[in-house]
Length: 501
Image 1: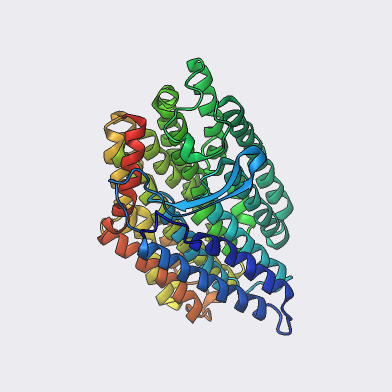
Image 2: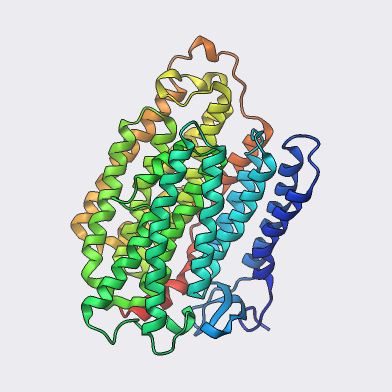
């Protein structure tokens, strides 16, 4: 049988394996500080990568099938309310699951400096992995909400307990913003359930039905906008972005890797999957121009703020806000090219921003500072790190041949069909991206080397491995983006057909 015709329970294994890892870590003896919990977490994260790789290798993208979802598991969960455990992957969710598994493995390897309560730290990472993969695979609205909420708990404690000196403030700000957005999401999902004659949370049953279409147009638009705000907070979209820089600055390096590399993508994924998949063009159309304008504001505003920062981590945090604006622009385009570009950009940005935050950790572990003015000339004493950082900077700028360019190019092609003037402004703003990226590179790596950094060491084996694995992904996708777009295409083809664009 084909994978979309039966329950393989492979996704169930993928969802439960990190939870099992968390349990093993919690029960394991810990005679060597953080080494045992980290080793167990690395083993489970590595096994998770293998299972996800098996799923990806057996995924068969096809636009000809009525159902583009594969590896579906479906069991009755709360039958009184028609709630089901229903998970599957398609061309939108599979890249995000692969990205999550890869970055979690990298994050675990990058967490060797954690000495405070390492058991709890790695337990939280494992729980976070299950929750995030659950978000990307859930096809029941209630299950999606549960997974979305579950992700908040480990992230709150990872920032609040293991972060910097202002960690409590950053964690509280994170939970307030995202918690309020989640409450609004629950209201929308419950409205869909009670106002829909079928009284179901089943996404497959609701997809393409244009929920609330039996009501006045303003009701559809209001519900669409409410759900959009929920996902915009996580994206994050201006003006809901202010929690992100604080969370990044205070979070440990590995947590910043996951936050920027995966968690921000949950917002964009939710917009594509649920806003577009459930409401249809009638609800979306009145807001598309506004969404495109906000996307361009994200791009330009984030870039200007990145230029103004003196802390390396804040530069990269605002860079993430700017780059997620390109994803938002691709979504607002509401055509297949733009949506393909948005998903490709999500994956590419996950790799690139993870590399940038790993470099923050490399530098901070050696110098104990993130202030740009205190650094300079590090390439002279850390040549391997300097060379890989230049590669990463080129990817962040969007140099052709690297994955950043492929995603941005598709976004611009799709967006230009709908918003010519705004697309021109967005494309012109790439000059700002080049400005803050190259200026950061020059100040940190190629000025005169201060005497106090003369004995710094270059990348160790784990650091080099993490960076080179991600760099390989950036290079391969830049040279052959069809590796990913061929997977994405069937899902976006079906979505555009449902939208009737």
